[in-house]
Length: 145
Image: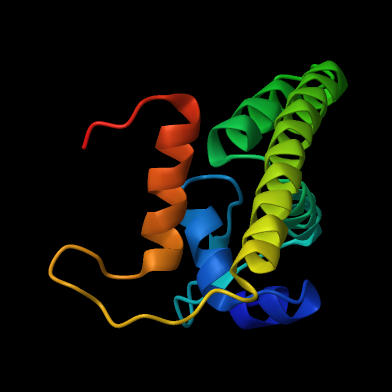
């Protein structure tokens, strides 16, 4: 199948197919009569795997390592588990940070609800933000003004 046919079959773009071909993750044969690249079922299965792990957040290097193990006839499952566990821990940390940010944003909305809008001055752009920063420094006793 041609580049566009493979792309359409896997709901991706021809550029994606070309990229993974260029970096050696999938391979194609060239037809002598027209020079078009042709992909077989193996390339389709391999690209399907690549697209699936990309959706899980795997990096190109991680995919390369997995494919390398598989190409050498070794199971890549332990490596996949390790990557997923690491990615889950990273995601959990990001999630907790997002929750903290969410609470800060909610608190800011509540705190700013009844504060007046002020025109910028020579040293202040938005008193809501800069006032909070100054107040936070004073609360911590770290004012450098």
